[in-house]
Amino acid sequence: MGQTRTCRITEKPFEITQAEIDFCERLGVPLPNLAPEERLRELMAFRNEWKLYRRKCTATGKEIISAYAPDAPFEVYENSVWWGDSWDACEYGRDFDFNRPFFEQFSELQKIVPREGTSIFNCENSDYNSHLRQSRNCYLNALGIKSEDCLYTYWTVENKDVIDSMFINYSTLQYEGRHLNYCYNGIMLDECNNCTDCYFSYQLRGCDHCLFCSNLANKSYYLWNKPCTKEEFEAAKNKILCGSFSAFEKTKQQFQEIKKVAARRFAYMLKCENCTGDHLLACKNCFDTFEGLNGEDCYHLTSFGNCKDVHNVYSAGWEPCEEIYYSAVVRGSQNLAFCNYIWFSNNLRYCDSCVSSENCFGCIGLKHKKFCILNKQYTKEEYEKLVPRIIEHMKKTWEFGWFFSPMLSPFAYNETPAQVFLPLAKEEILKRGWRWKEPDIREYQPPTIQEIPDNIRDITDDITKEILACTVCRKNYRIVAQELKFYRLMNLPIPRLCPECRNKNRIQSDNPRKLFQRECGKCKEKIFSPYASDRLEIVYCEKCYLESVY
Image (tube, rainbow, N blue to C red; front, side, top):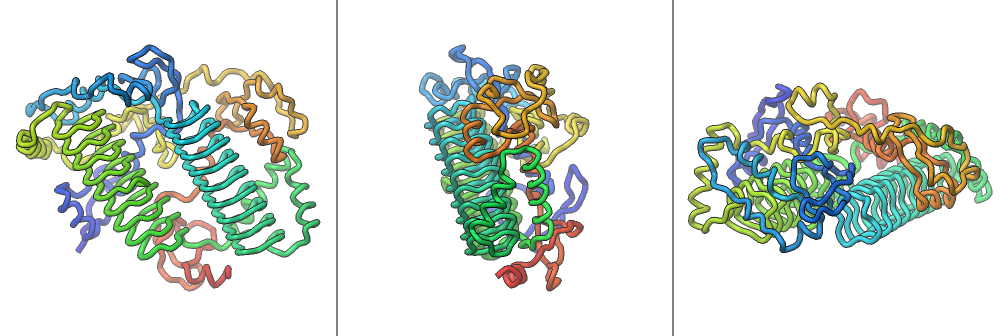
């Protein structure tokens, strides 16, 4: 039997299943007292996925590109130094004080242990990115691996020549795409797989040369969901992709109208068994889970791959993870609880930025360590005797069982994906005691060009020397040469929004990471869907969707 609890922030009830209760008992942690959405908010508030700053490395004095603003109250090392052998995090170790709260002591340690500047590894010509690996010639991407010549993307794997897109895998020549796999040469595609030369289309599989289409499989030369000749297709494509900004914006509105009337799956799940969530592939017994593949027996999990028994986590796996609870950004680890940014580690509690470590409690920045508490080294016997005492102390201070408060986050709330996925007003953020970062006025200067020519044909190379201003937030941005080359190749206009607003628009127009109970629009079966019951889209259960489309 599960149970109903009350969220300590929203004061609304939420359900906990018996499987979740059993999992918490197995890991020796208390049941959560926050609703799933508030748990995700806390976890997301510990990661800066997009914003970059110029600052100096504390160790070398060298200017670096960093996720930490120059005024952030932390020691920050450039990556080569942080990962090197010139320093040891145990140098900052201290005794646990049973007369003080744990989080207070952790906060003091946090301010003196050096932090990794950015997360760029094994990349070439790709300094201006966040969390990028094994890539080359990339600019202002967030969360990508094995990509080339990509700009302004979010969560991507093995792509080439992809711009302004999110959740793209194994694709080439894509612009403004979302949730694509194995696609080539596309513009404004959404939830498509194995498609070539398709434009402004939704939910296509194995299609080529489709325009203004939805819910098609294995079709060639289709226009508005009807067969067309090659000549008709080319004429329609050339009319809308003429390089004009005004024409492109009008076409985007037409595409939104197509999506409004297109039948939709209650959730996007392929090869899944007994799951609830959205955008899942090859998962089994996963509930309230989003953006993941190869998961089993997981609950309240967002952005994951190769996970088993992982509960209440944001960004886990790819390097397999198992038995992880209430943590953020975990790779190749097992038996963790209340941890942040952990790689290849086991049996940790309340640790941050630790690598290849095991049996540690309340530690920061450790590499290849074991039996440490607040970064102080202990013997196995001392560690096993002291940790239970600390846990009992934290229970008395009402700290054990909570993830780190966003007050302890290295970043202001509006520097993190929490503000994009789960936005709060500045007043509410400050009311909760969390940090808010004011905009840098230096990024909001008058543009050097007052009006951008409507058509890409009228844009000269000098555009790369200009300072532009976003038409929504007025933040400055530039067009880089690599980007201009792509627009000319694809006959696309210069964007009028800054990269940050473009990314925010994509995410906020995507499905929420939240499920609602509603009825299938055809058979009235009860379903759990990211589409709330008051939304206007046509939403079908899996059976009715397949019948209507195929």
